Length: 235
Length: 235
Image (tube, rainbow over all chains, first blue to last red; front, top):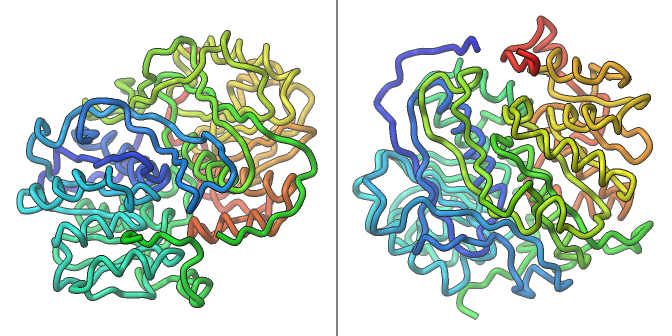
């Protein structure tokens, strides 16, 4: 495999993903696909982090999204708990319907506790709501899902939410728009830390049409009329 | 949630995903994200199928892709074995480095055995190699990853491989190009069975730029010089 290898700007060796019941599959596994490809070129281990070591199920029975009684989810096995995981360099926080459930609260606390030790925080979709509730986006520019924009941003009154953006970088916080945008922000993060050559190599290998322009966002227009799904956290 | 609901062309109630060690994360979870959204509107259950009920790890130590000694993968919990799963309407077969390992053989046998009972087969990336080895693509048009094209197609000498294609539909076999293309083919499948309105609704909610044209394929050009990774199955 001939990879465009440049010396990274800094050493990244531990990447974690915070999972919770009802996490959105592509929010987690889009960025993790990108980072898996990165890990083939650079020594990086993945830590799957949750409240306990019990398998974490992505599906939901919440009628706000599940109107059919389907049982459609995948259970993933955590490698570490919030208490046992070593200090991470990068933490990925996915979104999903689970963000608004009681069961997301331990993840909010984990993000609050671990953020000061991180080099980078990456969020996908309304994973930004978790970061906002943890307070780590206060005073920063950030974005989130356009399909659940009102609900997702309501929990972060002190965040400078950017409505039209595929992703937003402020300091070490890399937040992205809905679901698929997690792939774009993760590629952009690789371009920053490892160089654009490796990011393009990975995007091509994934046959992914990388949107590297943070301002590209047709979905802000598509969802301009308001939220499609009621993700209100307080009700 | 206001979904554009049309009566589906037929009843789909059981969708399976065949996982094996070293499966590619986005090959599986891109299509499953799409189908999860479908399942919120129509009653469909997911079956995670493997050789045994032990967790299945997506990572690999195979030096053909892993040059760094990283441990970077996620373990998912099967719900059924190849023997215990009920008859499925749709089976999704992902690809990945694991396709070329000994441990993929039970999945090849499962696809061979279960295909006659399926309504649809969907493959992502070199998951088409598994279907080809099972013989179910013989005499059919199909496509697969452009980054590992030579190796992926070599195992299917009786398949009419289509090099420039985002996805190919022949009979009830829906094959797609590398990794991300699994999302496009799954949306196209939903458009066929449930109508384009629901497919577009799901793509927009995922903030995914759906490539619905099966002939759109810049990656055939990008990888025209041959395989990037040595995925030769016989060596």
